[in-house]
Image (cartoon, rainbow, N blue to C red; front, side, top):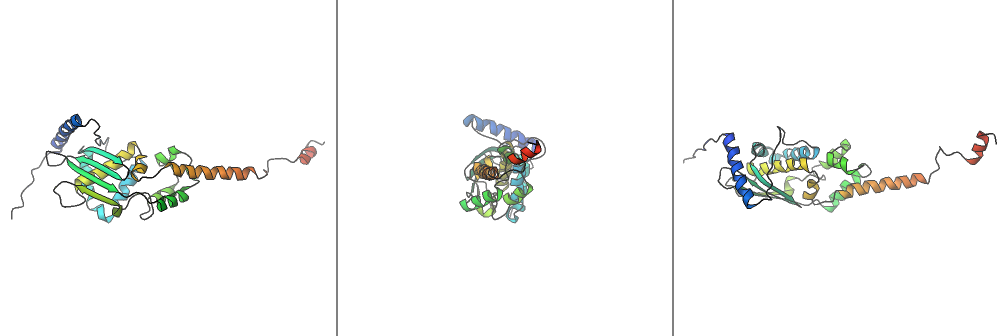
Length: 237
């Protein structure tokens, strides 16, 4: 049996070929959205790092997802689209045409979402904290819980690529998944869109509880308020 040999292609040529193919695709579809990695890191924000950390934490993916790192870093993800519960991508591979990737992610159940809101309530001050990941450390534990957290588990993710690789988690799929993390760097709110939940509910619950506490405290007499008879004594009246 002949196993055949793969011709070695320098990284520089791969990048150049990807740029040429992207130009062709852009003429047909101006709305195409490639993943461009600036610098050495493929993830910088809390949301991007947490997304990658979650994927890499599962044994189902650990041995395969790393193959996509070089692909996304070298500009092979020519298009990435994210909507509610679905990710589509085009990745430059060994073929002259890009491979099509479709990833579907189950929506976060109402029960899980309500539990997360309850656990996080009264602790988020504003949208900037939520976007920037500058929230209490305990939030990370809540969001990253494998069964009841915000981030999807392998059983909630369905992967598909039209490349000839038999593996479900091929390097093209892995590249797209890393690309999703990179997209969170520029717009973290896309994460909530992908999980099909309303992030404003987190803020609303927190603010409602704070307002209720303020109203309750407003009804309590303050130690700083001096009774009228004490005022008389203070001034010798």
